[in-house]
Image 1 (cartoon, one colour):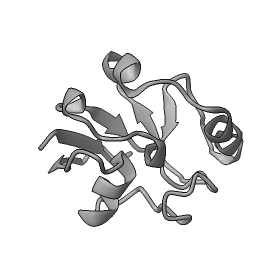
Image 2: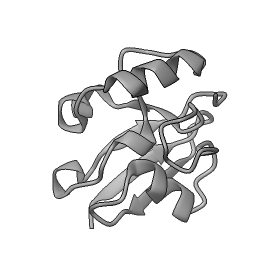
Image 3: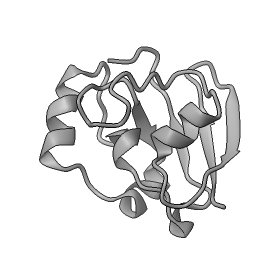
Length: 106
C-alpha cells in the first residue's frame, strides 16, 4: 500500500498506508487525520478536504478539473498546489506523497 504523509497546519505528521483506489481524502478520514473535514463525503461539492500537494508531487497527482477549481473558490488561502484531496486517487505511483493541510477548511 502506498504511504501518504499528511501534515497538519501545526506541523504534526501522520504517515498512513492508504489502499490503492481510495482517494487521499478517504485515507485521511478512515484514519482520523485531523484537518480534513470532508463534509460532502467526497462528492467534490465543498472545499473541506483542501490540501497543499508538495510541489515535488504536483505532476504525479494530476491537474485540477473544472469542478474542483470551482470548489476551491470557497477555500481559504488557495495556492498553486492546492487540491481537493477527494479528487486525488491513490495509486502505487503516489507512494511517498506528502500533503499539507491549511489552517482552516472551507
